[in-house]
Length: 176
Image 1 (cartoon, one colour):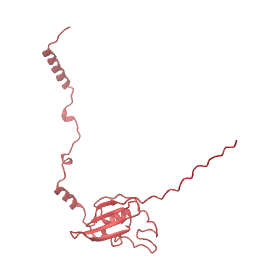
Image 2 (cartoon, rainbow, N blue to C red):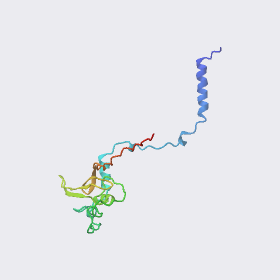
Image 3 (cartoon, helix red, strand yellow):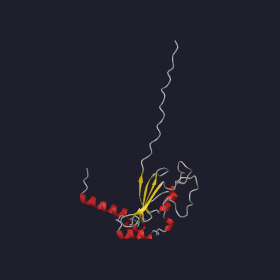
Image 4 (cartoon, rainbow, N blue to C red):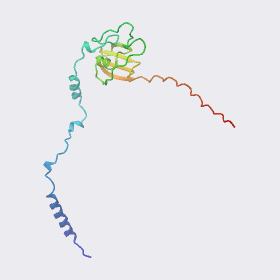
């Protein structure tokens, strides 16, 4: 067996690397995705305030009245309940997404008129509204401060109607 000295193997490896480097493209031609460092930084309070200031001010047209109607909504015709449907179950509202910071009327337009509405002021003298939807696609308690949605509490699902008892299968009498 032939023994190759370690120094000769190191020189051969170095030559192979140098020759291989000739085939590597220029690193400036490689397009890597750009990562914005501000994506990973926690938001600062001033940035939050800037985003909050960008949202439009809530005006009287964005607020509900004591019955849960907006200024641009027609009053219910006689024979209709507070949910906007005929006396009985509430009419389903068109499907639309909900998000925090929506105005009172945006939520009413998305979910329909609430079954109960409580309007008052909180400890900071801001308008505070609690709308409760007992029936409909999104039953829950919707809380607003200053005309904007701040929380949604889901109500428990109504108990399902008990299913009728199943009758035992009839036995066939075999004749012998």
